Every structure is written in C-alpha cells, then in structure tokens.
Amino acid sequence: MADDWIGTIEAAQILGCSREWVWRLAVQYGKLRYKHVPGRALVVHREDVLRRAEARGRKTEQSDQHSDQQQTQAQSAR
Image (cartoon, rainbow, N blue to C red):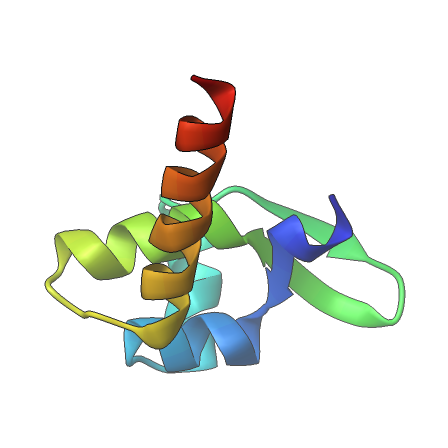
C-alpha cells in the first residue's frame, strides 16, 4: 500500500527524534526499511517506525490506530 511508506519528518515525529537520525537509522544502521522516491529524498516503512516507537516506550496515536486496525483485521479473519 502507498500509505505503508512515510517521510522522514513524519517518522521523526513518531519516534521523537530528528529527520537526520531517521536517515541514519535507515541508511547507515539498517534499522528501518527505506527507499528513495523521486520528489522526496527518502521514505521509510511505517510499520518499522511504529515497532521501533513501541519498543522504545513511545505510545503514539498512530500506533494505537495501527493496533486497532490489526485487531479488527484479525477478528474479521476468524
């Protein structure tokens, strides 16, 4: 899905860090899946960012919404 990828500004807001640190996490350290997109310098995979935020104890509204969506999908699949 197109919304699986987010820009470094949004990722930085979710993680509570700078855009530069998001870039380092992705490109330099390989901690986030990323790709280069024309017109945008770099996008990272939303799921990786949300997992990292949760692992670091950052509870975000987006991670709550993502968890709710996953629970709804799991219940629908049953």
